[in-house]
Length: 115
Image (cartoon, rainbow, N blue to C red; front, side, top):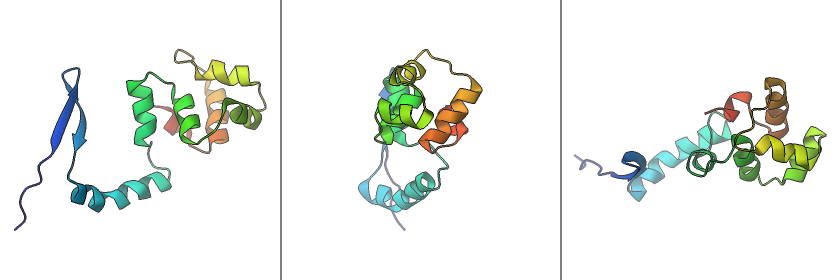
């Protein structure tokens, strides 16, 4: 019988924020995590962290995750770089039609632009 796995919980602001797992456990679950990401079913941890911990808009977090510059996204959307900067502002609330276009330009689903 194997020993129970011990996890280390790291708190931020008095709340659980991260869980450290043993390397062997991570190696076991890693293929499942990568498969989920590859199928487009989730939001990568780096996008979530950028949004939650650094108050970055999901549009910007996704763009950076995908290795795109504002100019690249602007070309895909047929808008100016300044328009992309405006969409990416943390307080911006683009219309649903705009969000659909942005999601398509990023190659993600509309649902992946919401947390």
